[in-house]
Length: 307
Length: 139
Image 1 (cartoon, rainbow over the protein chains, first blue to last red):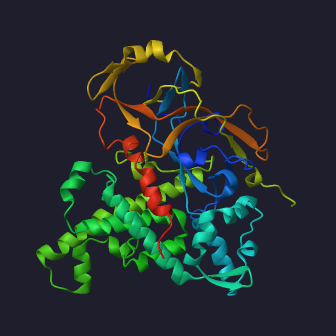
Image 2: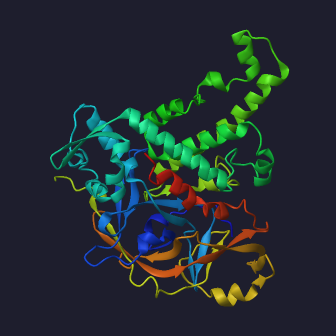
Image 3: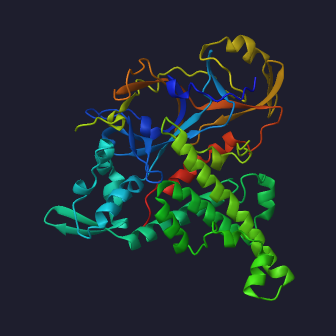
């Protein structure tokens, strides 16, 4: 009953189970076309991903697949083999616009966004400009100039970093009020709760939030954001060395307690977000349906399927 | 446009009457069932279901399953989407429709009792986190 065979039928599905924001499925206004799924350039992977536009293109939704191995659904008196649970949640269109703005920004001049947001590989990208959130928030990532009735924009890295930092802050707050264990993908909730007061927490939250946001931005921006947050990069081999070695190299006296805790917290925080982000990215690339999978972040007991 | 990319096609979501749609019982099972289509769920599954205070249990194909009901997050609705006509090429526009609706479902673990650590339960927190990631930020 627990067959290990990989689902090959996924791409030929004709039925899906989803949880959708009510706003995505509210009856559309007269004249609006209904919601549509489109493929757009994923800013983190540069490959196609599936997104949903609410009626009238005023709201963008992300399509994510919550996926655990070996699951199937019963729906009424039917079996559905594909055990994925899809999520349609509101998404900030700026994440998808950013790559276009950044590219145009290299020319250094102010331009109308309509001129900038064009992509022959992803013609639906122009719909992003109809989203109400786009108009309300372009100034967070670009300088704005108004000439007559027309607006012109120029990408600003500085503004974008401020905007991303605010997003990280908000995400940290949300993580704190939720029950998600940010410390380690395999740690149990009780363990995390007991650890609540420890120093490691704040950085764990920051790194976790940074990992979540990094799913919507390029690797370069993700690295810049890490810097802006004051978090050291942790992928370099030097950092991965045990503290004893580092101490020898830096020629500092070996003190028992001090560095030990630091190492613990860094080690604790290091692996999960990094690993998950990478796993999530590769999954997003592999999944032919173009849906991003979220299992890595939300299933603490999920094993890394490496064997 | 010389080359028509597959990314140009769209899939319309036909809502029909979401409010009036069928509301079936929905179960998420801890095994892959190599079948798509009709099954006598009531007769062979639901009939054997025991519903004690905080825990549901059922014997399915000789294995003990323990289950728990979860509700869709606030402001969210469960949908079963269906595509009636499979496209013949990846450049064709497609249509999926809402075939049924649910507000809660039961997920089942193999042997282990359901806890708040379960992936499905954690997944119900996603809308809250997504709102923080994607909502408007203050100036």
